[in-house]
Length: 134
Image (tube, rainbow, N blue to C red; front, side, top):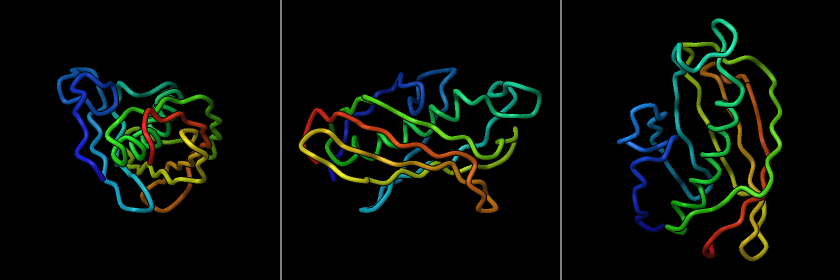
């Protein structure tokens, strides 16, 4: 693994972005993960996290799996999200990404949003293009 550059204004992980999510990612050989607790400003219908932000978490954890591995950005070419359960405001969730397969710079990833009780809230599959090799 490399020591990647920090993008301080990234909406998902940037520490300087005042409206960002400020995610902190952890990576092992098998997966990348981040925990998050949605607040009132992250809701759509009362008490429920906005689906677009759930999609953002899934996309970001997959991209960061690759970014931490290579130190270079990866761009989402295609993403498919399936929502299974609502995520409630104030509920701690974990986003987890895993590598599915790779062919050159094109990489297929999977990700899940898992509630603290182990229930699967959402999942995604994506094709991502890396600027560098894994």
